[in-house]
Image (cartoon, rainbow, N blue to C red):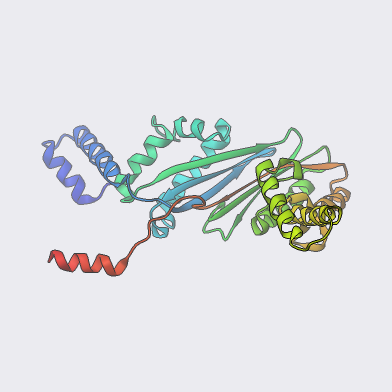
Length: 294
């Protein structure tokens, strides 16, 4: 069962040596532990990736501490979740309700059961998938702690009828670029209109302080908007591996190796714990409270 020796001994004592009943007792005990720990913030853990010829997935599974994230037992969970995501399409809810490898449990239930043996709150947070009809989807994990596992995972999809290996090699370079620059969108049209409007309003306000005519202000704003797009749109960004050209220009260069027209159709970037509100711990207060109890 993976439970500790003393827990196993207690289970057998409680069930008069009935092995099957003892396993059920341990499962119930593990579930109870999971419920107790469910309120704790799980903002550590790992991002995992998996892929095949024309598709790839990225998943995030959280733990409470980095120590647990470095344990092989936890890493195996993340690998299995990534394989499930690859097989069922990557949508988070579908993965959560899919069968966990080697069991009759769902991914959600299997992770909950693992809390009893690992001893921390664990949670499957999210997953996503990219696919192409022809071409390649490359994966990249920054600062990997094990193969395909780390704190930051990126997928980049390139559609092409040319050399898939060359396309994947370039897509991996772009994935490294995405890891470094964190673009908002693939194209300017894909940026949230509200974000664009907010930036434009700020630029207009700044430009008006110059006291120049509206016609000049409009040109100033357009210039700043172009700069904004160059900073946040993947295809317009300066390519990290060759800052003298944009990602879009680098793709045109890569088409020589791919030996066919190619198009970047999408990217995904999962950074561990992004958006999770972490609990702030006052260590001095904790020590003081512990001393007061004594």
